[in-house]
Length: 138
Image (cartoon, rainbow, N blue to C red; front, side, top):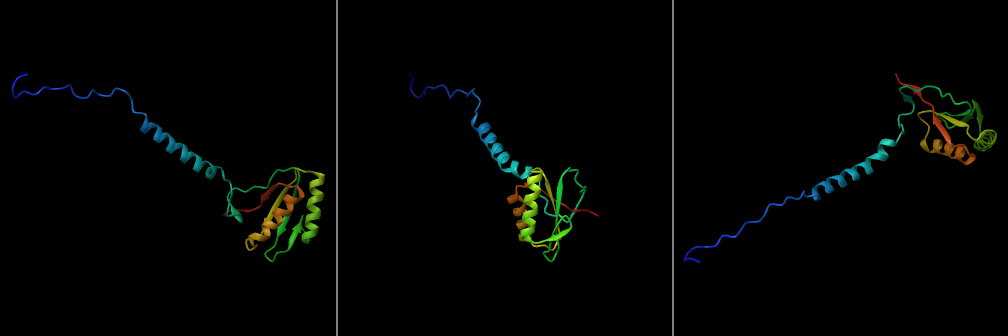
């Protein structure tokens, strides 16, 4: 070794492997986004029921119609009924054909709680297919 002369060591070698950590991080973020947004895209709930574009009468072979006026009067197939009569008629319809569809026609001014009560009576009777009837949009 000479005086005043420093030895040079070989520098760090370049890494030739691919760093997988950023790729895994990005993929995990995409999976989380997919998990969060998938239920939102599958929701088919329409909140603007009184007027909707493209509503057509259903071709269901068996259905019953329940109407609710703004004052709260309930009708089963266009005949006024009480809550007890409605439950009896829904149970009878379910016994005759369990796949019967309930077409619910409610005025805009009807409180949501009353609509939920009617839907609950239908489900309690065994009728799980409930459709909301709306007028075509203008």
